[in-house]
Image (cartoon, rainbow, N blue to C red; front, top):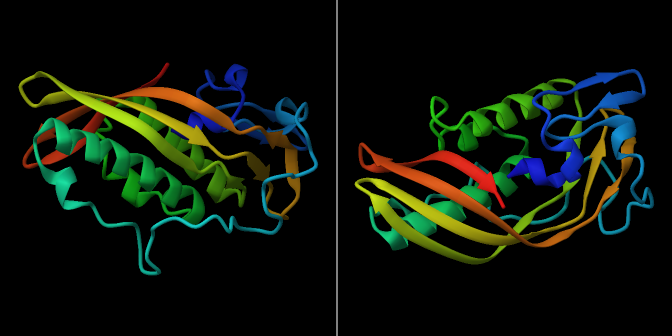
Length: 200
């Protein structure tokens, strides 16, 4: 999910490197490649951390709903929504572990690349504000034994990138509405795993 927090032309590159004040856009987009946006910061709170609330508890990530444990189309849909909720938690809490537990790194290479890129960003003290998702609709279908496809439509808040000193990097990336994604889920050993994630 994180990839669409940045312009479409910055989403296809695999990794990023921040060199002085000039960035090379990767999964998250850095530096000069984002400087075309509105730098007023409208819609995104100032300071070192987002104040946008998510349903995380003070001690960790939101719990997996009971419905998201079932191997049914309803269960697959609930799990796909939870995956997006966890993505919001990760960005706000800067805690990658809950996200890593939800996908199969051997199957969802895109999931792994995004998490790895964000880990590098966090290691440098960089962070994102805003960019939280709201699911507006979803639909799951079973395609074969243990494999389900979930179409999810969502909106995303404006997002701003900051460096370790709390300074804006580039401009504000505008909100999006009506983005659609196709999530492939595999049910193994009594639990769901994301095996592919594709935006439309």
